[in-house]
Length: 584
Image (cartoon, rainbow, N blue to C red):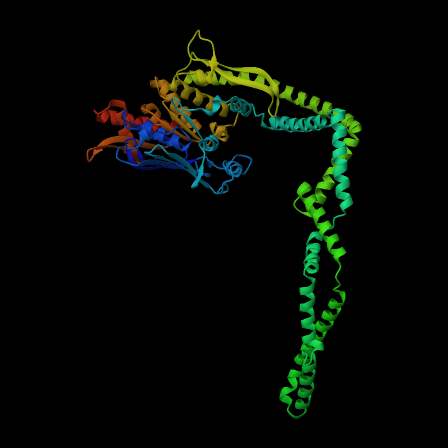
């Protein structure tokens, strides 16, 4: 859910910080006070278009920060806006992973947009710079904004199909169809590979046979290259190695005054001394050990010198072997382990090609069975969708009638598509707000108010389409909904009905709504008053949280009667709040 919104130097907003809550968050205020400006500023953090013209006069840059949290506040019914139902995953984890960013497991994500007077703009997610396209993809997981000119997620055909499937409780069937499609696709790819032309198959067999033979003939051993490099280094510097070993051996054993002989003299002298003074007896053992170690070293050097024979042929063999290994590394892998692994994989591919006829027949039969199984499941899914679509159409028309659009026609149009993860159906939600006009796709609707009310009806209908399900069931599409202009062109009973549906949607999902109507505002869980005033010769927009029933009643009274607020109007406003609370 959207927890915080911070705006600096955006249009008439100098410095503003807001904290939002679960449930229905309502923004009201005089016309032109800046309510829609708040929504426009928020949209910038979601990847919306930015222009330096929105920077407050005299400022170098504007910035907007939106803070989303994984868990919302507990509601009266004990639920809370949280992780994706049934998955335990945060809504943004996969996005962070796909974009190579850190912080995907954190319970908070911060979107920040900065616009500079030079025209430069940048988007940051948890202080990591990202592209606008990437942020828009993330935004679809977090929020839906319904306002004039804003992109609506349900314009996408896939989202429309997902909404219908959710209404009809077909998620399990869709998952099974997706599994069958994956199996069919795998077999189809394998058959295509096996069905390549005979000439190409023979060429591939020749190439793979050569590679396998080349790797097998090399008879590579793990770590062989490192051992050969060590041996090459010794043979290439044989004289220096022999001189160093001879010097060490002579100083230890052969030369006059050699260390081993002198230690023998010291050892015998200490033994004699210890006969008279026991203090030195303790040195005999470590001295004897040191002499034994030097003796071992001297013998090792003697044996080593005996093996150090000049062997130009061996050096040539080592260099040829290392050259072979290096050539194989350039062709098949960076290490001997990689080369051997490539050889094993090539053997498997070769065996598959050599037995292509048998495998082709086997895969072809498996593919026919998989296709038939997929077609049956997809046909059953399509039939269930079409049955559910008729119920969904009626439910949406009923909801539209309750929000002042009773003459609106709504239909789910089906078209046969190609096989896919979600079956073979393609749907398009179509609407006609005016009698006598043909239904058209949602994106063709011009009125922002009608569009917002339609989206409210769709969300509400999808949520209450089956017994025991609340409007919050649609929170998987977006845990936060923002409605601007939802009250355009309505009033009275219709406005009250819109308020009730917003309240119903907000039982589990978070809803932010900008309104001018008290019939809607009275249903708010949290009410914010937006005002514009002059300070130090500059226009400033501010927002005040109305946290007492008295303040809320006063704002509803203003919305009812304007500046002339009487006791009767205040009583009427208080009664509206009481009645709305009873209906909630």
